[in-house]
Amino acid sequence: MTVNHYENFPVASLLLPRRLREPVRHIYNFARSADDIADEGDATAPERLLQLDAYQTALLQIQAGGLMLSDNDPRQAIFKPLARTITQFSLPLAPFFDLLSAFRQDVTTQRYPDDAALFDYCSRSANPVGRLMLSLYNADTSEQNLTQADCICTGLQLTNFWQDIAIDWKKSRVYLPQEKLEQYDIDEQNMAHVQTSEAWRALMHAQVRQAREQLMMGLPLGRRLPGRIGLELRLVVHGGLRILERIELLHYNVFRNRPVLQIQDWVLLLLRALR
Image (cartoon, rainbow, N blue to C red; front, side, top):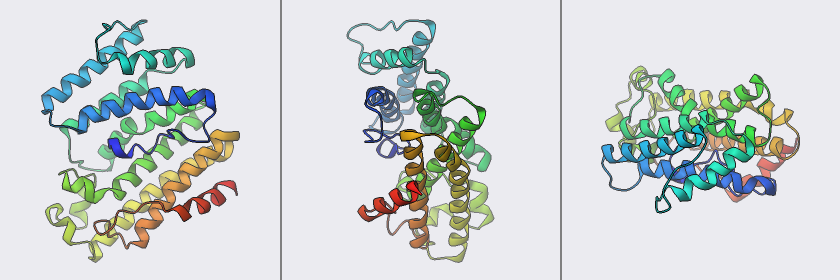
């Protein structure tokens, strides 16, 4: 989940109640700034990890009962409002630590051997976002809610991976599991030139189906939760499903065009979310 495509966050969403807009912004600023540390700029890997360690230290201070940063510490801008939000809404700290774990992994890992490794990454890079949103809405009240939120976030993360295959490949980052590339006899070094092959289409058909299954397993949560959160979840799920449809419409040639939602898609998404 790159800094420019943190699409699991409903930042500035018109559907967010006014009382939650600032807390969501504080959580988003934490996640985005940590993602920046992991992915942006010219810092070395050890330098990035040291900065993420400093974020971990600030979280541990909050967990211990009080933030202890000097007034001139640049982390103040992120963690002072975040600490206030965590306290005000009694947010669990585990999702924040999980996010940091995923950002550390971004620094050191560019390949995933199999689905299990990729889903483990999603459980820390994406699922914490859904769990925090449920907490803000006081909807983290059952294991079913949490499990279905995880499905939505994992499905969105996978959708983002397949949407951005070309962008990530140019950065020497490949989220397609290595065992899948081997299964379909795809050479990742030649990935940009096999977009019209039957093997590539078969691989991508399987990956799109997998992401769709995750989103559909989570969709009942959006139907079950009332009001704004339910509608927002349904819109988010249908947005992900529509991106997957657009990948299919491109015949999986995501190197030719990055599939994105168009203006006309939003009417379709609203109709799907309301039915």
